[in-house]
Amino acid sequence: SDYNIQKKQPLPHMFLPLRSSLPPLLYLFLLSSPPPLLASPGPCPDLSDLRTERARALDPRKLQGFYYEQLYHDVAQVGARCQTLNITSSSPPQLSCDFSVKYGPVPFTIREVYESEEDDDDDDGVGVYMKRADVPGGQFLELPTVFVDVADDDGGEGYGAFTVYSCLDVGAGVAVRELVIATREREPGGGELEEMLETAIEAGVDVEPGEVHRVDAC
Image (cartoon, rainbow, N blue to C red; front, top):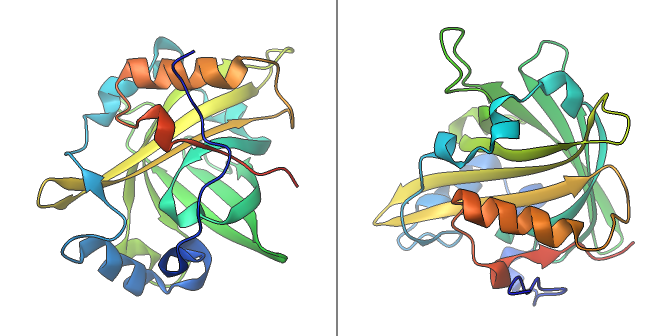
């Protein structure tokens, strides 16, 4: 396979847990600094165009539950391990996600809020969200986000896996990108993750396979 997923990555000191330790306004400053410390070249694609047919029929209620993050492209997760997500939805299609992680021995959880862009008149916004951290000042940094793909679990009552991608243009032809592939199972079947990554890239997610990293085992 051409999808060479990285198992580990270095830990630059300036990127120590940005998601957990930096105040939101400082994180926003980093995103807008010239050149942005967290950005990569190229503008964001149209997120609604990245959805597979399964994602275009997304049922947010089936996303609820506990997942293990398996693959990611996100500089804020450099040095992280044991990443998990617990998704709830008290008023679909709005979502909340408790993102838990360890940086060294220190556990940390942050709640991320997904505000749906769905319009009752059409399906262009199904699976398309604005994501923000549920912390003071979180409204100042919202990331356009899309569920690129979902897969039913064996029982069909919920999703067994999903791929979610965020991209924010910050000017000067660069953008901040995040990609997460997560599964209900701690250890998914052979080839499943590579297939999900391949599907995302073929759908138009502009992340190189060599920039995608596996979550370190706990």
